[in-house]
Image (cartoon, rainbow, N blue to C red; front, top):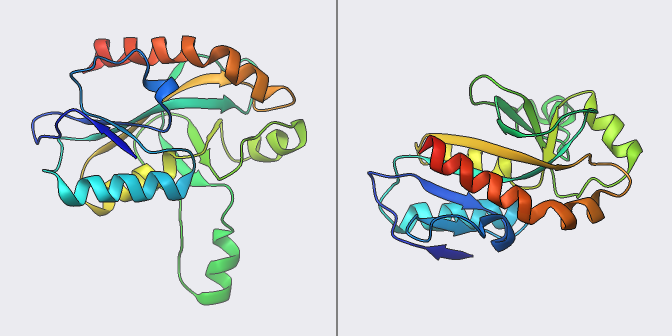
Length: 188
């Protein structure tokens, strides 16, 4: 976990997984780097929100894989689900709703899980439920909501979440970071 800048109630906290994704953000902005995956993201956001003034909003910026051909660009997520948690089975087993999808507004569906999707079979299975895939969005959104802080998920498509995605992500992450920084300049 790496927190840069000062968190305050009059500005949003920008949350990203990796320094590579934050490389072109204005250094004066409050930026939290969580590390990869749901556990790292949830722990870092919770620790930060518990020990600093609550920000005006939490904005999770990051790269995402496209689950459908032709998806590119920057997207504000409308809802997010956990693709690696069997919510329906757990509800049948316990009678409790655990990890239900989170509605955030209008926009595409993001599937979050602790897997980097880099094969066509996994991509096709996820494409039946979502448009994009990442590794932190659900954890960031869930944690911010538990603290009562408004949350937005902004994802830049870096790859097609299929065969070759790891190579494509490495090749595109700097360009994606520039586009995310442009989004911040244009929208905040």
